[in-house]
Length: 290
Length: 290
Image (tube, rainbow over all chains, first blue to last red):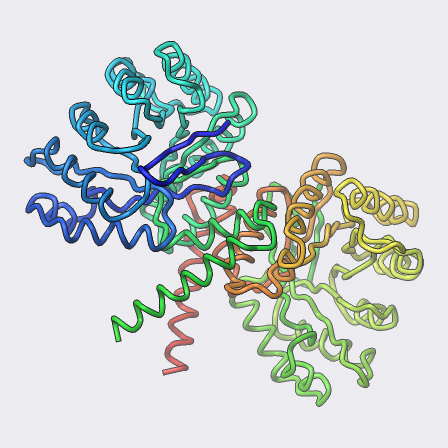
């Protein structure tokens, strides 16, 4: 199953027989004070820099979340979407808990964006899916519903099925629904990552859908988080995940190594290309810093 | 299935329901000029340091290979085995292509060592297995035979079955045979790692044996080898490998992260303990260097 995202000039295919897709996570003010301030002050230069940096480090798609209390998110999301489209050729992933903001982002975005996110919650299904359908977008479906996040892989897959059914009934093609099995922090529950990995395997076998993971929550509260995040993303890719909302600068090399090791990179071409890119970017950073 | 290794005072259990076991790879002169010189000159201090460093970085077992052209390996292996036993409490993995050297190492080692290695080659089966049986040791069985390294997972598993049959017929318990599915360099064959991973899955399902991997060959010739090695080891652990001949200083953190993410580390105890250990060792190294 292939999920195709588009900007005006670029098409990105998410699928198990394609290179793993990285959705850049950095344009999201949660836990990023400098970005929250930039959004509040309308400092577009900083946001532009985040977009360009992520594109340089190999992000295939950019997540856009402008959720800062007290700002006019509807007008801000429009500006940010247009700004990014003017400076990069990457498709966007519009990320908001507010339907009006999603609608504004979808109206401003060209091509075929991804919506982050719907879930199995009744209200979300009723408000988000029509937007996705009307715009011809794709959508991330989180495996949680009105009762919260289920504990077992089987229950999470059942929520995924429910989301898929609702989407298809509304006229959204099944391949435009990317399921996110959710991951809790392994520091507070040592089975948390395992449940997510088993959910991914089960989703792959039973539904064959594309699967997104958020690859940094898992290590919350632990030391040496990059090591845990790299190992987790590797495990998710092996289990069957096909895209992640992640930090391409930190995890790009691991993603390209996993693709290579899983036999999805003939002659190591993508791995070597990424290595040369990263080497140049690190040199440039060192020169600036020095 | 549990493979138990012993020193005089310590017991290490290899098994899918136990923490992943790291066999320290550094006492092997292949590609290590300084160690080759130390072995040729009888410089035991350097060898002792390699043993202590690996033990400090969390190696559970130490590989011992003294193969340097022109030296009396039989007498050297005895000295090295006794030296390590005097300074650490770790079980040993005796590593030689020469049966006389294995015999001398087995005679010198206390407890229950591991022999590295037998294969499906007729001569190896006939010469190595009797030594393993007489000493009550465990043995690593490489999935290659008189025709070389098979290309498919099924053929490699068939070689593993042949080794197991020969071992059991000679009176070696099946649980004392650890299979190594071998890995070629992914840089020269982009399916090389995948074949190894599929072999691991098939071995786990069909034979249930313990599985060892050598986790650094895979990245030969590629840049950023540690990233590839870390990703590969993570993939192997998920597929069902239970031990690796590896560099505990470089890959220990990844191994502990993989155990944690796969739900084998209640309350993150081993991960956090390893992090604190690594932090202290890095501080000590920085102090020495500064």
